[in-house]
Amino acid sequence: MGCGSATPQQIIHNDELSQRVETNDEWIRTRTGIRQRRVIGENESLIDLASDAARSAIKMAKWDEKSVDLIILATSTPEDLFGSAPKIQSNLGATNAVAFDLTAACSGFLFALVTASQYIFSGSMKRAIVIGADQLSKWVDWDDRKTCVLFGDGAGAVAIEASNGDSGLIGYGLKSDGKRGECLNLSQSNMFSDLVRGFTHQRGGYQPINMEGKEVYKFAVKEVPIILGELLDRYKIESEKLDWLLLHQANQRILDAVAARFSIPSEKVLSNLENYGNTSAATIPLMLDEAVRNERIKSGDLIACSGFGAGLSWGAALFYWQGPH
Image: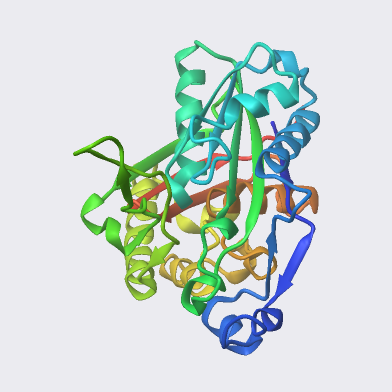
């Protein structure tokens, strides 16, 4: 029924990264499609961005905040490890909503969207806000040019509700493969300190993002077409009937490869990767909001969506964009 997004004020262009690591605009752009990214600064926070995105979605949906039953925050970078969603609930004044975090890295928004839909399908809840927000800039090794050029910060949200007519969500598929998890992770630091005589305890903390880029690329270009193809076959939808292909914005070459697999023309492939980089759980709702607000996506459009990333995890969904009444 509504969508929203919010991004940091700081814009870091590719050539500006050459002040930190040996790289340049051409090297980054030709390999990834990224030209710039947003990075949260000193007077900003991820919770504020997520709250702003959710607030915009609620406004588009024309809801009263107190009518929201559920808030799910998809994030791998919470400001509070006990959960950041309740703070967003407070910021919104959504006093009747239950709020919790969901972690599935770059697949997080899609997993959260499907999770929220189950509450709605069951009839236990009527209105939900699903947020994808991440601040990967604080976990990137900014001296590692293989990873630091890829990521950015941002937040996006959607407002969904029960419908008396046909469901906007046609179907979905979700998968995980922990055996390949070492290809992309953000592991805890293995640091121990003395506790009392003869005993130690593990100190909290995490290592920078670790990524085997070639393996992740091969995973995405293989698994995403498979799960999307299975979904289209299950519901007997031909790829040419799709209005839009909306994929996690990780690498332009991945977007192009998946589109080519289904003979989807480039004008139907949504991409804003060049302006934001990989914002993890935020990429899909951030792109959706941009396309809705510039009126590329219109009410009734059929969208094929896929998220994929660390875990390894991946999923796909088919849905109609409804928009506000």
